[in-house]
Amino acid sequence: MLEFENVSKSFWTGKQRKVILDRATFRVELGNSLGILAPNGTGKTTIINMMAGLEKPDEGKITRTSRVSFPLGFMGGVVNKHTATENCRYIARIYGLDPDYVEAFSRWLCGIDEYFDMPVGTFSSGMRARFSFSLLLALEFDIYLIDEGMPATTDAEFNRKAGTILRDRLQSATVIVVSHQAQTLEKFCRSAAVLQGGQLHMFDTLEEAKQLYDYSHQG
Ligand SMILES: Nc1ncnc2c1ncn2[C@@H]1O[C@H](COP(=O)(O)OP(=O)(O)OP(=O)(O)O)[C@@H](O)[C@H]1O
Image (tube, rainbow, N blue to C red; front, side, top):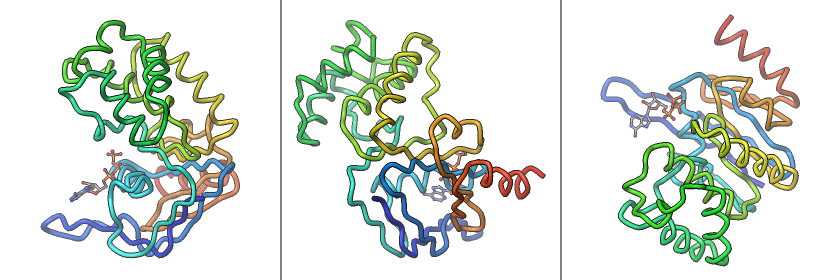
């Protein structure tokens, strides 16, 4: 379970206060994957980062009773001057997992051959995306956090392999996806929410959420 209680977050831009969340309260239960619809620039990344514990709320309480992933695509825990192998093994140890397994799984899924033993700083952006996604799937979480859908890699073979594993994982795990597009959420989510005026409005179905979203933002 992941719960926000009266969580507020805003940024001061130098001119005005940009409100992301205003005393928002909601809860995500295991087994009930959630899609959050929000237009660009309204705070999707900030909310996902707060869920992951990478950013703190200004006020309120965030409770995690399940293993919550880092956001898909997040490279903050990866050290550029170290190889993919070293990074994998180090991160596996942090999470108390078997480094041999995590390394072997990421190496296989990533499919970047000898680059896996080169410093991550030498990777192309596509390779970096593949590496961070492979690493995320090598680790075991109860709740996976995804910002704007699958990473945009141009490698069809990788997208197919990673997509299949992610779908399998979703049989037992829960996913929270934030996106500005309802289409991205269709593949993953049972229920959906719309971010509006600093509140998350929760709906039982994506269809209901879409109606509010289309009406408010596109209509
Ligand atoms: N540290 C910060 N200081 C000031 N403003 C910030 C800070 N971080 C984010 N913002 C602002 O808060 C708003 C929300 O940012 P965020 O990155 O969470 O939005 P987003 O919905 O993920 O955007 P996008 O879809 O464009 O990636 C933006 O206007 C952004 O400029």
